[in-house]
Length: 269
Image (tube, rainbow, N blue to C red; front, side, top):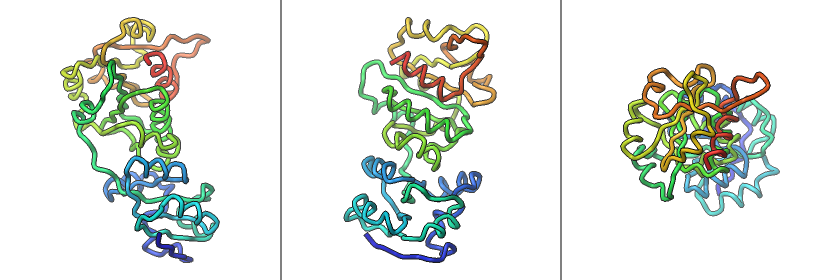
């Protein structure tokens, strides 16, 4: 571990951590720069356990012993800054003590992710165009907890490795295999060829209930969740094998997509 005590928030070696609250900037910089930010010791630990490589760590003096335990004998620079420097650098109060700029692993193909599933009656989730990183992270956490085998995200879906997604998932984005789909909804054909029934969660007319889908018990199931505002795209809707709705009471017509995913994952477990 290489300790570097820094006092200038404008030091260029800290650029990976600069203005982390600027969502538009991070969406451009992180994937293009081949990095993502892991925040908190627990999340960093899970990233390291998944085989991800840190390129640097940012922390405060009181957390250096914990960082030493995390980093071990890895040859990685650790930048130690005061609390006020960390806040001026990142744009927010860093309460969790430590964050790391991590090398982004190479993405697998959809075929590689599907072929790596080694379980009878697999289930996967597809996130179509979700824009809220909190929802993406919450869905990954539910997927890990409820035994979903993989998550596929469409080209317009928010980045699962964005700082907020990683934090909300509590590192589940490192636990559940996932990749980004290059062509959607055309890849529904790939899923169908692999034996998956694609079931889209929708409020549209003609949908069967989630109970009906559970009773059908498909051998291989792909659950599709649409964007927070408009739901599943019309082009996707036309290609689905099943259209599914969650029965609700009390005049409530829909659930937040993260809540709906947890219900669907549990029901189809």
